[in-house]
Image 1 (spheres, rainbow, N blue to C red):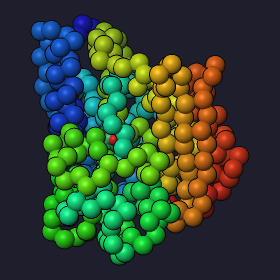
Image 2 (cartoon, rainbow, N blue to C red):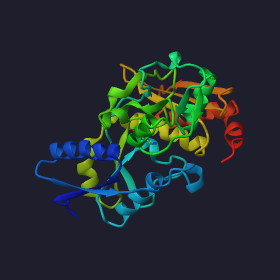
Image 3 (cartoon, rainbow, N blue to C red):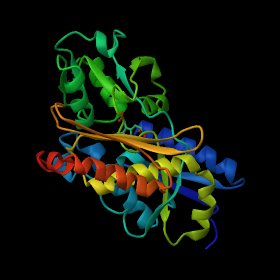
Length: 311
Ligand SMILES: NCc1[nH]cc(CCC(=O)O)c1CC(=O)O
């Protein structure tokens, strides 16, 4: 089967997701001159349901319908935020990652209408986030602030903030860049201040596994360093077998010499316990590095923490 003359790209239909698709379209047309692209927008369970994600089979809530369209042949390539792709289970049977695009910024940003930084927020400030990772870290470092649940795509959250449902927000910097709203950022948080989620800032392209010529063509968009980081991070999460209420954070990084390291944490939801691991790959491949860091955390009691959290 040759490459289709028009590559149909399926994605969530949020403004952020559609901006991601535009990046993919631009990179595809640059890499494959003459190829046309078409967008197949899909609304996912995670977009429709604004309650607690653990109540709707949280895992894969942002990817299920996109994967289904790919498998049904309604599209040729799916675009996912790696952060939203469950790592505790294999990819849906019959699909593979064809490329990891060059990683964007991995940091979270504080959005505050008055432009205050995290340390400047007064006691009792309501920070809108439904992320257990963000809430646990905030509870540890800024116990005088109050997290209030806030879901919906980033544009919707910004609207809720404007409507007074919270006083501040924590959002991914890369996401705000994609929707063109870096203007609302009060502070970009260092990875030490707010450790990012596994897969932060990485877009993955997914194809049907039997679509060999297309996989080969699309792989031109892949970034080798990002591939190594994504592989280490996802294997880490796979071995740890978290659930959607377990506060887990971490990121892999290649240093200037090209050596990969992976830093990761598991928290209790109240942030009072924090397990830490940081290892260099040395002669390990990225996946084995991910395994090793997960085992280091398991040795410190990560399993007991994760299983002790209701989900
Ligand atoms: N859960 C939604 C989601 N999935 C990926 C990103 C950010 C972009 C990325 O990391 O690729 C976001 C928004 C956010 O957390 O603020």
